[in-house]
Image (cartoon, rainbow, N blue to C red):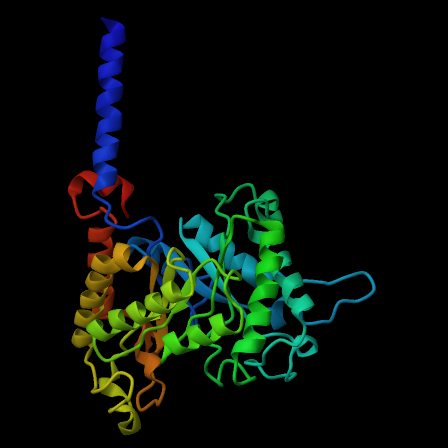
Length: 374
């Protein structure tokens, strides 16, 4: 009798857990944000707000020139992990996955020394920095052995530079040959330490499908585990269409099963921007704060519907925090879900839309799930 009762209880418990998990519509980590600009890694308040908003992935820059400002000497390379340690530890404390974008080579490893957007000059140095980062933050990373009081949350995905098909982010154009050499070196470095890690291609904007074709033509297939797209456009329909074009290129090149990460999508609230920006060729006519929130919701819904069909493994809004500057020509000053306005941190209407969709997709909309949701 007691044994029967115990079995019944176990069935009820595990059945309930299964039903609860079934309410989640997307995998853990699917929805996230970029944290850059004025974001401060030590600001626990903003990390808590991200966690409560349903942010499960944070994409952020790891600047190589800060990590390794000096060339390796006779005793080997010297690294300064102090800044990136803060990011990794804060994300771990708040249960958020961190996806670093490694970029900005130091002067001694750059084709154009002193230029942030320079292409790296030495694939061996690229391999070495990516291996060092995986050794520091990966599943067997030294950080987790040093900080036993922090929840262990290894970094398992690494993005290799950013938007190399734009001259402003990659100094060597055409980009594909030098970029493929870089991503191949990064892949060797990461996988020499953590064979199960995900090496993510740089996010490709504009006519991204053409840039992706160029990467394949340069022999890039097999050097990355995920393709990243930045599908900026005027409408959610076109945003999804751009990702569909990328998937078509991937199928043509034998990568039908490789996932796609949308590592940036956004609509800046451009209504307060300078006249020069009011009719932007990418985003179209000015968008109000309310319109930004509507566009965010429509796009998240569209990508959630297309997730399985297009193999979309991450969806990341750009950006979490921005600093408003009236009359600015930088649209992304008004892209933040949170904004710094006259020295004060405020939330945009888009943050409410993000939180609403995050709770729905992550299975947090029902009161029964309140304890496991923030």
